[in-house]
Length: 167
Image (cartoon, rainbow, N blue to C red):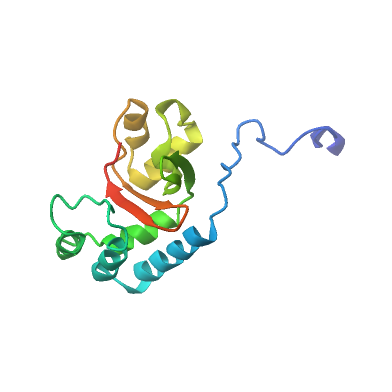
């Protein structure tokens, strides 16, 4: 009687047909890994001043600073209770993806921010909604702009951007 409950010998793992494997990310270069370590250190024990100092190392660094210096902008964010260093730490806990650019490869966190609407599977939609809030995956599927933070590091270790609402 128990034999009837046993799976056939050729059966795969339960749910294998509906569970998606995690996406594979290209390994970080040593220079990118060093920048990630520095950013994680800032996220855990630093603040906007340290972020601004690192951002200043790349002349064309981009943030949502709206004409202010990165230091002024991130100071303003911190004073309103929106801590940029904490967001950096949260973003770097996500998976990354790699994109080609005219300047070389760029490592981008989170990988979810780079998905095209048709690439948002049910599993990824649940992950997006858990990260950004209910309904955000549906909005992205309709062509909406990624409302969360996105961080990019060039393959040579230069921190290129930390922006929110990048489409």
